[in-house]
Every structure is written in structure tokens, then in C-alpha cells.
Image (cartoon, rainbow, N blue to C red; front, side, top):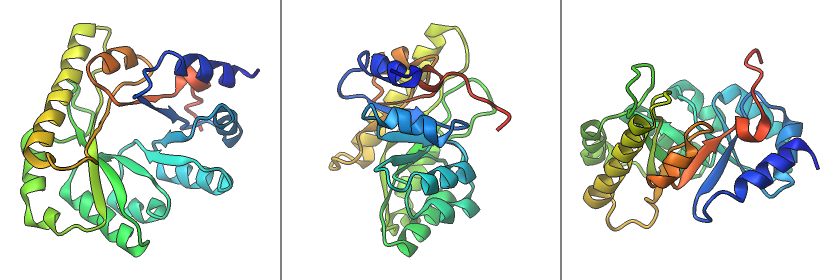
Length: 226
């Protein structure tokens, strides 16, 4: 058995059944994705639009669910609207409107997560609760027909301080609960909390994550020069 197959089977055995695994395949090859796929893994996450398109084209014969997990520029939405299954990184009404426009152009409804800034670092993108509430209360949002907000996403600070990480994940869970109560109480679709990566996935699951984004545990360390 290959190392990737070994890694993914071993890792999946540690996951609660209700938690989805997004295998983060950025900078890894299509052949490596095929190895993970052969174990039953179907959800793969990419950070960059251009790389996602190339892999999608190469792996068209595989029933892969592609997730865009990195920051998304509005002018690039049109390139993935035909096939992307979930966009994790919606952080503005303008982006949501563009996703809706391109979804209409492709006769699709595109699932989205609202990204929240929960970390101490200033470098990460994301909304706060008030900004999200403003979007969801706006008449512009209410007119969008081809996007579906199915949950929230956030990244904790990159730190060894587990208390801080747990606190940040708990804040995202609390945001999710408040949004569910205030805006999505009648929706069965709003159910995802995407949080947790290779270094903090256990804390994320312990604090309510339904979807973790893991790369190096499965594929090994990335070649960042690609």
C-alpha cells in the first residue's frame, strides 16, 4: 500500500463519522489525488483557482467534489463556477453577488460558506458577526437566487497555545449558532462549520467542527515552489 493510501485510511479511522474530510491537495499532483481517491476520498480542497482548474480538467473522469478553500477574487469566479461544489471563503456581499451571477450563467446553484476572521493575526481574511448580519439582512442578498449559504469557515491563529486555538474555534461555533438562530432557523442546509487543519484538527472537532481541511497529514509536506 502506498504512503498516501496508508495515511488517509489511518487518519479517517480517527475521525468521527459525522465529520467530513477535505483533503487539501494544493501543490500536489493529480496522481497523488488519484491515490487518495482510491481509498474512497472524494472531497479535495484547492487554494488557487488556476491550479484547481488544471486538476479538474485532468481528473474529469473522477467524481470528485472540488472545494475552493483559499481567498477568491471576484474576477476568477467565472473560471470555477461550472464545477466547484463548495466555496469556503465568502467574505463580502460583492463576492456573493458575483458567485450568484456566474452560477446563473452556468444554470447551477453554488454552495458557499461565510468566512469569519477569528484569529489574532491580521493577515487572514474574514467577516465579523456584524458584517455577516448586514449581508444577510440586505435586500441585495435576499434577491440572490443561485447561491446557498450552508455554513461558516474560519482559521485559528498559528500558535502552540491550545487554549487560544480552542477559544477561537469556540467563537466560530458561537457565531454559527447565532446565525443559525437568527437567519437560518428554518433551513436544513445551514449545517457546516469548516474549521481545523493538520495542526489543530483535534481541537476543532472537539469544539464542534463538521468539516476539517487536512493536507500534510495525507500527502506529506508541500512543495511550495510549485
